[in-house]
Structure formats: structure tokens, C-alpha cells
Image 1: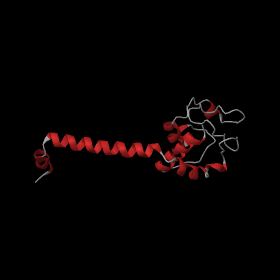
Image 2: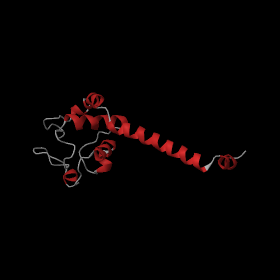
Image 3: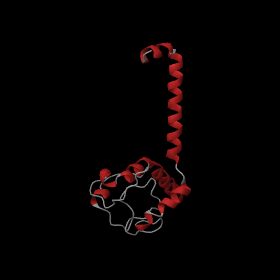
Image 4: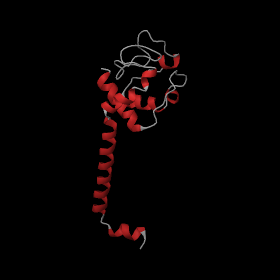
Length: 133
């Protein structure tokens, strides 16, 4: 038996149902991952604390109100010209992209730290959404 003959045995309706079920599972897994765990994010955020704080500028800008904010606009922080001119709004998607590779997203930025694990990024972002309101 070949793959083609097996596919011919499978009714088109069953193939369509199987494909839809696979898509539904992938969407459920990705949306659960995207939601993030703010409690775990709080623990992971401790590593960000070397440069950042929720309430005050430090080596990096404060994160209070970061979600939804225009990049490079926290008063009293000296941003790189690249980030000030970026016109980025810190949405969840942009924060995820930023944490994946800040210099790839905005060449010339001061930030160099990357978070490679997608779950870690989702958890940190969930924490920032909850804590940094």
C-alpha cells in the first residue's frame, strides 16, 4: 500500500474533520502558551531586576505601565536614539518579539538581554500586564 492509496481510502469528510481537529488542538496549545502564568513570570522577572524595576528607572527604564506604552517615552530615562525613534507600542506581540532579540528588533538599542524560551517570555509578559498596570 502506498500513501496515495491510503489517502484514497480515507473519505474526504474524515480527512477534513481530522485536519480541523489538529488545527483546534494547535490553537488551544498556542493560546494557552500565549496567556502566560503571571506567578511564574514574577519569579522570572527577578532576573530582569538587575536592570529594571516596576516603579523606578535604573540601568533600564521602569516597567510601570509598559503594556500599551509607546517605546522610549518614560520620563527621566535616557533611551538610545534608535528606541526613541522606533514608534513601537509595547503590545504583547511586540514585547514577545523584543524579548526574543532586542537588537534584532531595534538595531542600536541599549538592551542586550534575550529570553529564548517562548513560555518564559509569555510568563514575563503576563506578569508585566498584571503587575505593571
